[in-house]
Image (cartoon, rainbow, N blue to C red):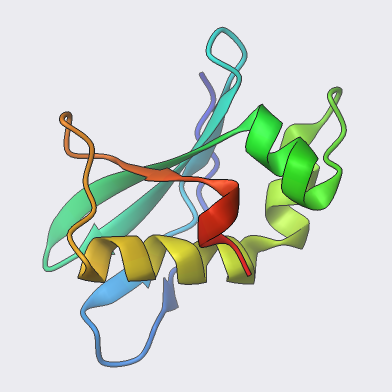
Length: 100
């Protein structure tokens, strides 16, 4: 699992920022994006199937689709976190219905 670290992108006054730590898990076929929320890290996950269904993501490089649609994915993550829609492990699962 490789983490990519880029500059932080803040999302206004909500206490949520996106440090652009992201990785791809080829075993689970899930992308994980880290989010800073109230000084805690929340992992947001989106499946290859969701990326493919919503954005026609390539099976060879699904992270390219994540990069191209980062704003919509961050918006969905922010909404899910603000609505406290967490999985049992504390992560957030972004589904196609959450994306605009």
